[in-house]
Image 1 (cartoon, rainbow, N blue to C red):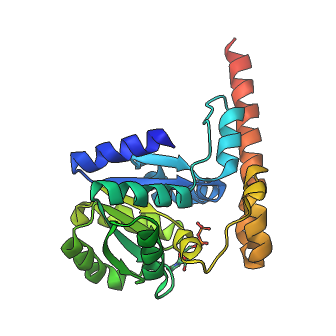
Image 2: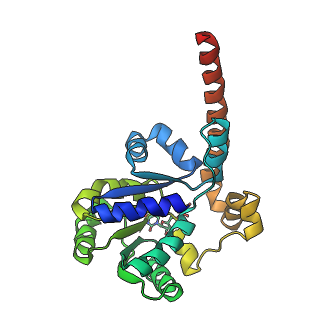
Length: 235
Ligand code: UDP
């Protein structure tokens, strides 16, 4: 987590444009079939391990990631640092009024936080020019986009350069949690790595998306087996 904020600080100082992605197993499975999304993930300036599945897989594949870095924790910490450093944040996405509610809640938590703007909008291509003009005029240092994956990440990749925003992050359902219209799992559930199950129980419509989890597990184990076979053949 601390590495992340050092990197984000450098990104903002550099004034160049950077995309951050918050990866979970659903992202990885989507990227198997969606070439455009795969390219966005591979070319992102920073990939955060949002899902516990990513952390566990990293250990199995011997490229261990020390901890999970969730989108919601990143946004909270970022808001705290933004208030201290005078970085302005634009909140784009979620249902009407939710981005505004989330921004105000963060401002109450971190007095001095400058909200560059909030807008629900949509990832539809017809709205893109109008939304980009709005963001360019607001000149934020940080843009948070909550259109759900992969739409939010593709939207950022398409528009990042013309927006000129130093840091843009796809944040999924983060505004819903901060605004209080969705509730995060209790800490003990997070600690036993079952936050995904809690979300599924609270919103059973997510079941179809959750099919990505067994597929991801299969993908990791089959990759491990083929790696072992290759290693055996080469020795
Ligand atoms: N969303 C949106 N426009 C869309 C699709 C989704 O604003 O066309 C919002 C939705 O309201 C929610 C967020 O995107 O706030 C996605 O939340 P989800 O729970 O799917 O994200 P996750 O946290 O699972 O990645």
